[in-house]
Amino acid sequence: MEAFLVATGVVALAEMGDKTQLLALLLAARFRKPWPIVLGIFAATVINHALAGAVGNYLTRWLGPEVLRWILGGSFIAMAVWMLIPDKLDDDDAPGTSKFGVFGTTVIAFFLAEMGDKTQIATVMLAARFTHDYLWVVMGTTLGMMLANAPVVWLGEKIVRRVPIKLVHGISAAIFLVLGIVMIVGW
Image (tube, rainbow, N blue to C red; front, side, top):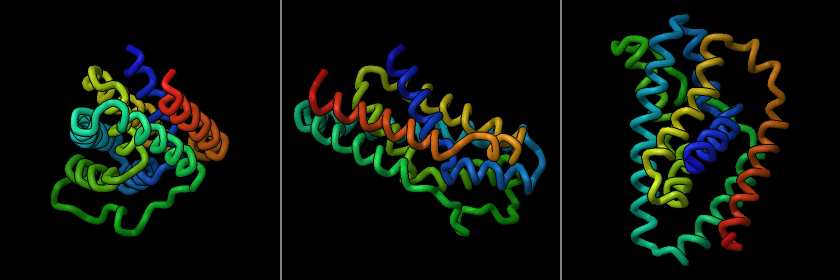
């Protein structure tokens, strides 16, 4: 249960103001069909995070616990720094017209935008950290993505304007920093 709760909280906070959250806002404004967008975000996230979790699990077995402890500790600290850098939605990430419909466009756009993103990398690290809780990590990171993105699809800019993104990023950075220190120290 710890893996699920940590994964949910870390990803929900990390996703605030992230480019995929901006993509969710853009999709909502463009298509104005919240259910296919939310379902597309869910499908893309499950696929992406299941793959990322598998990579994290593989790394744990390949590197061994001692090496992995240092890599994860350093990675969590690097993620803390990365959280303080604001995200922008690149023109390449913006959805265009598509023959795939709202759901298909959302799945493709979200899956591609999530590649190498903070939350995908966090999923790899969390799956490596909680080796025996792969399913809980993937479920938690998916829930975290949905908690951050579904309200944006339904409520749009109203919610984005009211949430102090800098504060959320600061809290996220602090959590990643603590996780990094805990990994290195071995508590």
